[in-house]
Figure 1 (cartoon, rainbow, N blue to C red):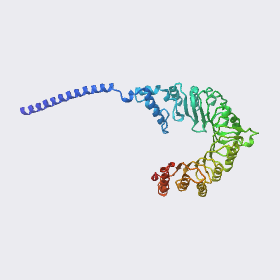
Figure 2: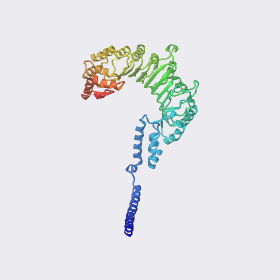
Figure 3: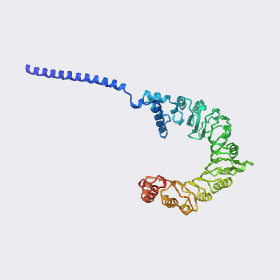
Figure 4: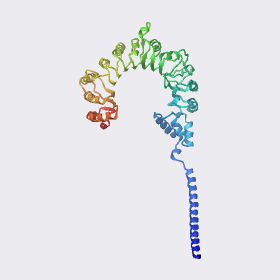
Length: 466
């Protein structure tokens, strides 16, 4: 009995000694930990030792990339991320005005209090010019007024401004009469999908830097009281010919004009004057109705035409204006034109150097074969240097290859084709697999021309051919 008790006491003594040793080791480890934490706190990460101006450049590059990501929920996402990393980065982010003035995009329907967000963020830009892209609330007049009031406080800093609504049929009326009248830095103003009272009156007369203007209605151009004398770019979605002809005589510096739909026929115009636009180099026409205004215009400098959904009659109006203006067309973009309109137009302009074709099912197989044969023979587009085809079905590659090969190698009496861009569209994964099997050879031959020196860009090709 005595012997058993002695053995147990001996074991307890050994355990006590082991515990004492472990406690001593733990005390030593805790002391080492405290020393290491102190040393770590005294160190600075290399990125935090950079001069502020270098850090700002990195931040600006980062934010630029973040703004290009369309899926980000709101515009200040990247800036708020930077400001939440550490105190040093927060101070740099919040104090750098250049991070807050450019590319400000706000979807007010996706923010519960967009007006408050703008009140907090816009002052961060300091006195720098503001580039704003604001999608206004669709059915909230109170928020609309608050947002416009907030934006108006910074009117003297507006540079590039786009105000729009997600739904043009929304019940919110855009309070354009509350626009700031003093816009000394404004270079570009774009208003789209907005509703206003028909009898609104506003004055934006002090906008000496205004160069680009895009409006949903031509009447707005007059009612806003905008200065037109220095405009270089004008885009009207819906316009009255009479109103347009009242504006254009004051746009002698205009270089780019885009028209979508006329709301008034030319017969309703009592003897309008002819308008000379001496510097206009690009004319974009999206429907037949805008071509009615061309009978009143002289465009001697126009070089590029972008024509969409035009009939033969619409194309004829373009041709008449070009002939009367004695202009030389170098670049043409044709979007969904029927074959007769497109082919006759291209054959009438032998000076075209750059052609972009975008078509769906408007052309039959016979039409395509006829056009491509004319290209190969050199009877059409004799000085063509670059060809772009958009929305092609992969089956068109078989027809396009002989054209590209012939014009790149050179045909007597024609200019050598040196640049080709082809965009192929597939409707489904099964289509891609089928196209890869059926057209692999022709795509390989196209890529071979690229390796031989042809400037070639192909997008949407079946994966197996890349």
